[in-house]
Structures are given as structure tokens and as C-alpha cells.
Length: 395
Length: 101
Image (cartoon, rainbow over the protein chains, first blue to last red):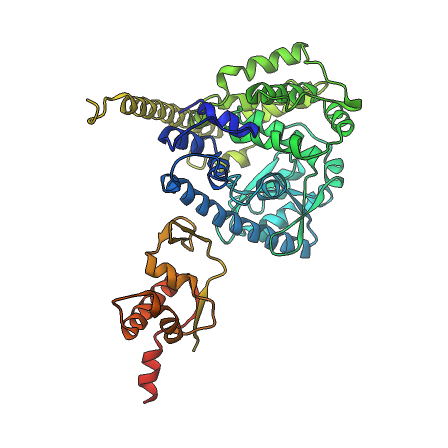
């Protein structure tokens, strides 16, 4: 489990695939890197060789994914309506709204949950929103206090139908305050299947958001690269706005270097970092860029499932390369290392002193991840052994 | 009582190699229908009861009588209804006919 099958790089870049059969490794890799839906689209178009019956597993995956997306849209529409009736506005980020705009059919882009950004003018109502969506949430009654003190960037909820909702106070989630009002002002209406609209991040903010999300995710799944390639390919972007936005946030290094990773991985001119006036931005080489390149070095990228259990501590470093934001960045790191007792009670329930529960929980998490990583490596070894074993027919 | 079943609008399905593949209500499992079930499934438009469905579909089968087909359709619809895959089906109309007698 790790690097994607080479044919999937072509798939992600939108190029024609080299001749491949219905190989198990291709399918396994496509599932791991969340691009099985894209692969199925190529089967449907007739581009991939082999009998369609050989792709039954993909067809089943696609059907399940489409059913899931239908439910997510229904939940999104319903929540938007209910929250709006209470005077709370939200906008969708990533997920089904992104799929509808930048992918060719429902089910192509796997979506786990709904990401909803709260209107910054309604942040004093986040507690009410949590009460409405999940009245039995463990943090009920405490959420608003945490939001008011800047201790919460988002809260994970579960709707009545079981759908997972990530309610965002700050959509960039870097731990340093962002230009929330500007982001909200630029949200756009997106059509809901079956009628109506919901608000969603505009393409420019979505691009920045996806790049940051891909970075925080350690560049582990190929799907994240596709998200960015699709926006660049299908939108006429206001690069002057993007330039100004990332400069105001101090995120030039984050934006430029993540874009370069996408371009180099997909082997195309996607993400040439064209800035305002159409000039190509030079790759930064300052101290912050050096830090970024060390933390998100090539060896940790495209690790798939293994990347989910390794390299997690890198998330802590995400705000540090931001220009002019050392103070807020270090405060964020401190808050992550020593969270408020309310959050420790929520994430590490149990008996004992705050420090005991905090450190025991971290140790348990670390042990779980190491075991998971060992299991994944064992499984990968078993798969390789099976594939390399002589077949009975030929032997 | 309603006896004109239709495919539930909440069900996602597709026909793959002549067989309808449905996603269950929980969204976690795939249900594959055999070719006969697929024929019936595709005919569930909310316009016909089990008798009318049997009348319309019997020509597709060589060794099945119309009565046998109607009984099979009723049993099939009851299963689909239990799994919440169809609407407009409240049960076996034959029971109501017997009660009315």
C-alpha cells in the first residue's frame, strides 16, 4: 500500500491511459487513492480494454458511492434550509458541491462527509447550529464558549440520518485567523440536484483551500491532486485575486510549493503558478520555503493508507511557514500541544488528571498508529508475495 | 390499501449485464436481482398491480403460467417492500379478496 499504480497518474492528469487490463493491482490502487470513480468513468466511455464484467467491483463501488452522494445532497439541502430558517447561513466546501462543479458525473469523486462553513457574521450562533444538527453532541452547551475564545476551528457532528458534518468556523483551518469575511463574500450559489441552490466556496478560494487541505493531508491520496487539476483546467481563475489573497494571508510558500508538487506529480503544466498579469511566479527559496520542503518532503507523499497513520505530526507545522504570522502560529502550536481542559474531556474522556489523560491518550494513539502501519506493511508484503508466486497453470 | 408498486425514489440502482443492482436503504450493501427480478423491477412504475404486471410480463417466460408468475411477483414485491425498496405496496391483494368474500 503506497505509491499509486503508474496508470493512475495519467488518469489523474486527465490523459489517456496506457493499455491496462482489469488488473487487481490497478483496482486496489485506484480504491486506495480514491480514484476508482474516475477509473469507472473510463470503463463506461469504452477507453479501458477488457470485458465489462471484469469491472464488476468498480461498478458496485460506483453504485454505492452514488447512493451515498444522493443522501449527502439531501442532507445538505435540508440542513441549509433548517439553519437558514433559524437565521444561520452556511456554505459548502469540497465534497458533493465540488464534484458537481468540477467532475463529470455523480460518484466520480468519493465524498465522506459534508463540510459546511458558517457565515462569519453568525459565529455567535454556532452553539445553536450544533444544537439543531446534533442535540446530543458531547460538547453541547460548551461549543459557543470555545468558538468565542478562538479554541475551535471546526466541530464534527452527525445528522439524524447518520451523515457526518464538519461545521467550520474557519474553513482554512491553519490555526491562524483568515480573511473570513472576504471568503464568505465570495461564496457562490451552486445548483442542488432536484432543484434549489446552496452556497459554496468560489473557485479561487476553493483552489487555495484544496491546496492547503492536500498539504495538511500529507499529499497522501491522488484524489487531492485531481481536485486541483480539475479546477485549474475547468475554471477561468482570477489569478490577481488569488495572488492578493495568499499574500494577505502570508501563504505564498504554502500556495506556490503545493501547486508545484501537483504539477510535478501529474507531469503536466497544471499549476504553473501563473500569478497576476499572467506572469509565472518563481519558486520561493527563503527560510520558510526550506522549512516547507523539509516537512513535506517527497518521501512522505502519495503514501495512501499508510500516510493516514504515519507523518501525522506534520499537521502541527502547517501554520509555521506563513509569512508574518509567527505569533499566531506559535500560539496555535501551543494550543495543539496543550489543549483546553474542555477539549481534553471531550477527546480523552476518563479518570485522572488533565496531563495524565492527555499524555496517555497520545501514547495510545501513537501505539494504535504504529500497529496499523505495521499491519499495512504486512498486508502489502502478502499481496506482493501472492502476485509473485508461480501460478499452478504455468508451474 | 395500495397495490400499485413503484421503485422507491430513494433507491440508487443500475442494470449491469442484464441484472439490476440496487443499493440497500442503509447504503452499505448491494442487492443483485436475477434476470426475472430485474424484469419485474424495471416494470415497477406505479401504474400496475401484481395482476397487471403478470399479464404484461408473462410473454417473456416459456415455462411459467400466468398464475405462477403472479404469485412469484407478489412474493417478490413483499420482499422488496420489507427492504423499503418499493413504495405503494401494502401487501398481498389476494388476502383482501378473501376478506371481502
